[in-house]
Length: 212
Image 1 (cartoon, helix red, strand yellow):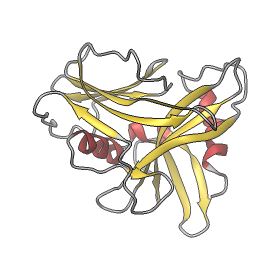
Image 2 (cartoon, helix red, strand yellow):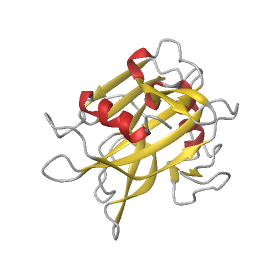
Image 3 (spheres, helix red, strand yellow):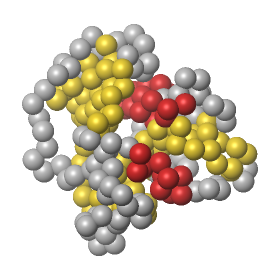
Image 4 (cartoon, helix red, strand yellow):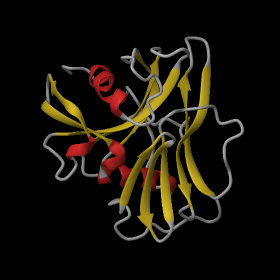
């Protein structure tokens, strides 16, 4: 792809409220992630982790992205950029928290109806990605994938899904130890590389029973 995903994120990340290295250009490297399949086979869905070494200490950012063959109507503010794929041609890359296809599949993962896939291998499930929900399960409100509001802040992106349900997309990743539990109904957890010899695990998305 030209430009590459990392190159696009280098230009996009400094404009986001969770980006920590103010006034510095990102120094990014890929550090992990996973994919989900679009049931219609039209939209690429990836949950990417990048390490940034621009600040005083490394930071790890979670960027869910979708890849489309045409622009997504009404999502201009969520466009990360466009790129040229050697086989597929021009692709529009979006911040996936604003894309109903990604949100719908993330909810399906929490309900056990979607299987996480390895980031760089085709048709290869990734069992290290786990989804947990308290109780017997939860109902998805009609039209939940079309979030009624998407709020970006320094702590991440919160999607209001209706009927008192909110989905928090973590942007700055931290190890799961001591993770918040109050009001949490479920979460998706995965790992990423801290260095060549060390890994961490944390919550990539959190489902809340009520909106606070």
